[in-house]
Amino acid sequence: MADDIKFVSVSFIKMKEKESKPVPGYFIHADDDGNPIMTDPVLIPIKQNVNERNETWKGYIKVEKSGMHYFRIDGDDTLTLKIPHAKVDITTGGGSLTTQTAQANLERGFHYCELTYNNRAYKPENKSYEGCIAIMSTAEMPPEGKYVKNDTTKSELASGAPMTLYQIALGCRIDWPKESVNLPSPIKWYEVYNDNDGNPQKKDSGSIAGVTAAEFKQIACIIFAEQSQYNEQEYLAIASVFRNRWGRGKHGSLDNRTVVKTVADDLTKKSWASIGGTQYQKAMEGSLNPQECPNLEKAREALETVLGMEEAPYTYDRYVTHPGSLDSSNYVTIGGHDFYKNNQYRSCDKPDWWVE
Image (cartoon, rainbow, N blue to C red; front, side):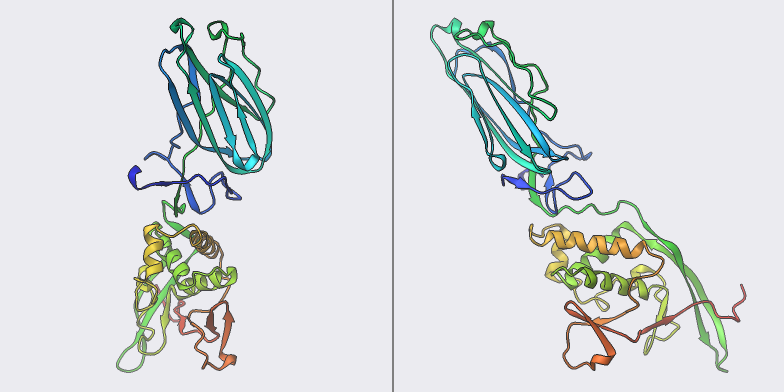
């Protein structure tokens, strides 16, 4: 709900490299259909007004490509334009419609902008008029209007589309997939058992084609919660552990009769201690702070990368958090985790004797 949204006014917010959206930790306020909710246009047509009027527009200019931007403001009495990050600060004034211009080289991202308007009531009332407009262009300075000193009734506002501003809020909004994410090739598995005479027999078979949108989010949140301090190779290795368990059987008490037949089979607290923990819950709820949120986005990217490969970049299927007692020849340390060289899950590939 809008009442729960924490709008921000920081002077500059970076933009994602491949999308025209704020970096993780911030999001553009939008309606239920995903359309940005913009401020009202910075425009008050020229008309008589015998009462004092004050208006304010606050929000962000979205700059998708760095470059020069040109601004023109008209106002009777005063219209002020401030863009702190670009050091733009101009004001009209003079008792009738006047104009001011500015230009600034804006870098790619979101620039906080504030416009304030004030119109004072005049005597005689037939001379008390109001009007303002703010126009931005990336091509050239917007053409001027018509400015008759001490007579706004004979003046004209500059022509052009009035500025509107984006509303940006604090929050961890990740672009989670809306549909299932398929693997390049399905992971096929074949489950067998030994009969009383020790002869292998068929039990079951199937395949894992990919992950659902809900499973994708849960796995990414687990990757983040397992190691909230970002390390690219560590995130890729943890994502690999997930993939390397699918369609395989675990040694020990869970023998080859117990296959990880579905992605959900491995999404348990028994398999992943972080499930149910504070960081995991915050990630799932979208309540991470702006410092934590970029790492959840990196976890999402790591999982997306691993799922898009024919094989996981690492062969590990288990790890511990720096126990200190392991024989270093048995594991590889990546970031804050020690990944076992010897796999715990064994292949459930199709046996030579299996006939469909």
